[in-house]
Length: 401
Image (cartoon, rainbow, N blue to C red; front, side):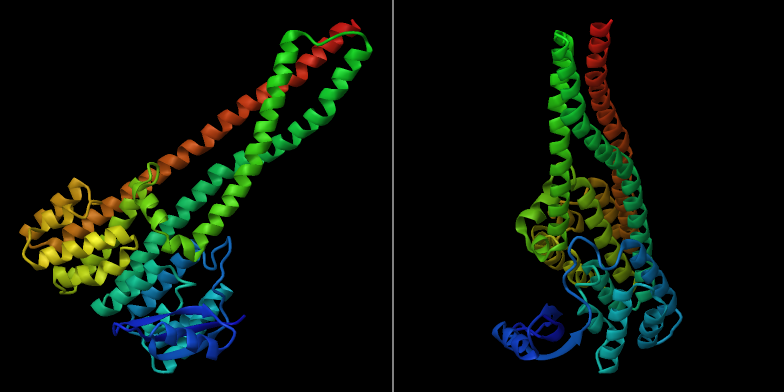
């Protein structure tokens, strides 16, 4: 089934765009009209909306893309030419196809962010929203420079995580193979030899072998379960269900192990966009209204909208930010100081950098614990399995002697 891009106007008068699979243009048109989307245009795309377990464009590629886009867009080259140059330079086939199509759509009369926003299945929502903010504020180069630093940091953290997990993962698989061999071949042979010689295994040996068998079954079950859970979770995170799930949004916001990192990342994104808009001359209320789509969590977004209205009505900025419920006391104090010193953009930017650094530090701490913890657990299991093999051999040697 082919994939189509569309852009139109919804029943509230706002622009809406995206990508969908449909059997034909007629089928998509009927679907859009049922949703009361009017004045739409439809384009055929060679990109695919299905991502499965893998990203179509990785973090390292996004970092390079944003870096190059920042340099070119800051050089006063027309955006349509920037897109053309980027399409020529990129090595990722999906990204190159998308950029070539964006160029064609811009040639048809649409603006950069209008064309860019149709590719939400290729580019993360964060990049799309920030590109819109950058075009509105005239700071597109600065926006993409910040995005480049963000995705470069994310790529480094992901690489550290892979490095921390890959050795224990390989060790676990090899251990699983050894355990299967010991449980179903070696142990029965030892037991059979001793029985044939008229001897029985000692109580200690029987105990260790029993524990070893149980551990073997547990390890094999854990390896299989972990592989299945990992695949299912990754598929879920790549699906539209996770993006539209109220439960998942609340879990990210309040989950014991991830809420600190998630909230700091959310704060960093919002602070970066707010500081750029404020620096470009926008008022705080207008800046918060523009930044609202960046708040991808529905419950936080609703509170953010209430805070925007409160500030518009003259409420103290500190109280308004505090009622959102995700900002730490240090962030609110910096916002209050910045507001009183007429340097709100600088203080919000600094507070956002602190939040981003705190999130990265928290992730690195978790990563630093994963590898030694896994190695210790696997080493203990290996020791027990080694004893389960060695003790029957000792019993056998004693029987022969």
